Length: 321
Picture 1 (cartoon, one colour):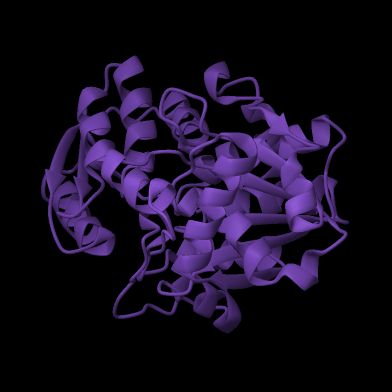
Picture 2 (cartoon, helix red, strand yellow):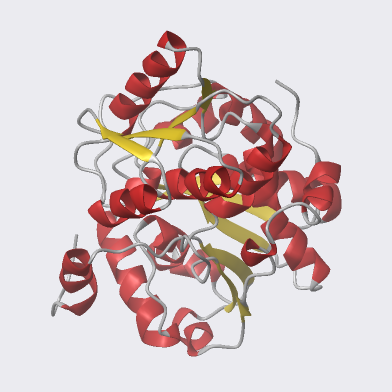
């Protein structure tokens, strides 16, 4: 597998469907005062799939010459991105998701033309099933975090910060399979060496943080968190290797902090973010003194929340995980 490339990130700006590019960058909000920092929010929820995943999946499928059946596993957002890109190019796609996957995301993947198969107790069990199925029928298996184009597409987010002249001291980004953080880190190492790239995992799903510290993949037995988009227990080796040269640090956050972050973003911006999408803000709440007075950028990278979860996390008094 080739290494990630900043040049390819820049080139991707001319390839990716413009509906996913140059997303809004919110600054000088009341969130600055609430957190005691100067914060820039990259809003990745105002596109057809409500997440940043459309950047990398569109780049991949645009450049893919292999015409076999596409197969992937997804908690929902990656599958939506791949489904939309596949449908636009008349490519069939099978997505495996856990039996308890977010029903809003499952319905959206199906509406975008994917065949969705529910299998296993969690994302990684669904991934195992997807890998086996792809091998059994010689399909093209697409693994989030293991494909350079997916990370490079995500890295266009950092390119846009540079383009706007607004690269901060620190970028805090959620870490699931690792495409987002390694894409951002690849661009920063090339063009913005003064910016620290810090990944955020859920406390109940620490495999990527453990792997980063050990410099090798370290799986965990379980991944217990409300943040389905970063609920990973089997690290992707390619992403773990890429993090060595693209990521400065990893921190963990509790589910309670994630819920508080979701509510804080809604209160100060009117934007609904899903748990994984709020992980960067949660890190600001978990370690407030560390960031105080600094300049920080955070991607709000997903907004697929069911009505039931919105009532539980965003509307209920004293909501918690």
